[in-house]
Length: 79
Image 1: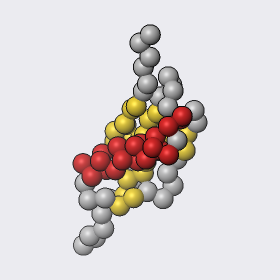
Image 2: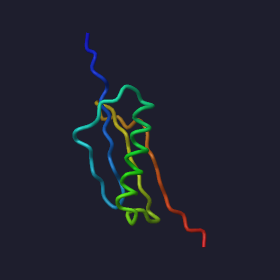
Image 3: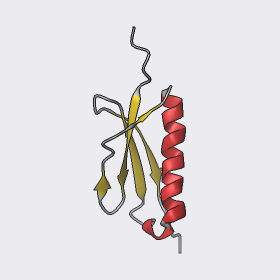
Image 4: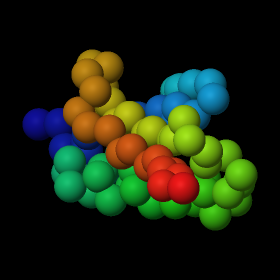
């Protein structure tokens, strides 16, 4: 019996796309959702200027390459 945890891949999309080639083993899709939000937060913490009107997105893929969910962060100027 294979007891390995599923691997999730987190792809960053802002002005360009960076694809996660290594992935991260996590025990559930909920854990992957939390990891994706934390990843987006770390990107913004380290490079806050990356966020503009085009926004930022993190796609989470499974081992087969299926996108499971996306975290979208967008700056909306209402002036």
